[in-house]
Length: 287
Image (cartoon, rainbow, N blue to C red; front, side, top):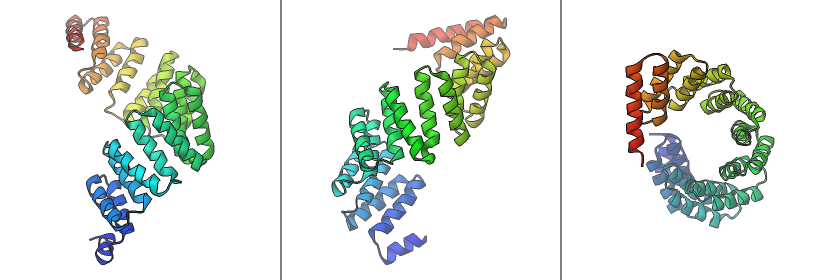
């Protein structure tokens, strides 16, 4: 029995249940976390933070409607609770309600102008809506406010610059994101895509290789590296990567097409025809 469990038996106060709920949530035991938050709310139904914590747990379970109800309650108890507005915005975003999400991020920022996470979240919505300039402004603000969020802000700003075809700026931002978080495979993958687009295939292959090392089950990195090898006419290496994609994602239509061509270029006629047939079958299955 943990010290928290013993303390709850002796004196079951709301904060003990809340704290144990947080521990359960960190361990991914969301059901027991919610049970503890329920107990905490039963003891003291006026603690906004407990509703917010329970809402966050429901959001982790994908139940955004239920999460929003808890955030509503937290905000009703404490209208200046910036974190609850931010988290409710995340849940609205999870439901595809971007307008309400932006409103909540705006409110969180109005309450706390130094709330870096809210700027990042709002920036992601602006980017999703194609408003890349406003997204970049929010990422700029995040980087200026809080180095803790700088890595993710550089990453998303890189994506925005890429969508604006400002490739040099995008590469610079992905490089900064990698410097701050060298274990995040997507930064290497996205930078590799830009190098691929710029026909800097060796640099692209180097980035895809690191992405694969960090996430060996990522079919798209194999596919993209295979394409770079293909463009360098290194067909055997390309074939190895395309075959890996087929194992990881056997319903990927495009990989059969490119692997079929690769087989043909290598003089493997039978394999070429087999992949072409598989490609045709998958195309017919598409709605």
